[in-house]
Length: 88
Image (cartoon, rainbow, N blue to C red; front, top):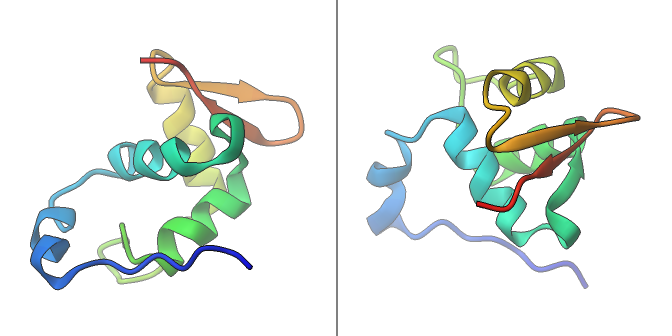
């Protein structure tokens, strides 16, 4: 059975100040091989309410993929819209 992620109310205010690439890194640290499909990553971030756009909507996978390109020291773009967290 998949592990449910619950965000403690005490850390919610800390999460509100995180950037998209910071929450991407949080999710990747829990992912198998530190790799996920961009769409699944977007869903996971939204479902856990780690990051919302200013309009309170989910970040699209295209935004996730673009953020990957802006932080090549953190993320590696793989074929098939997969993204991998680089070892830091």
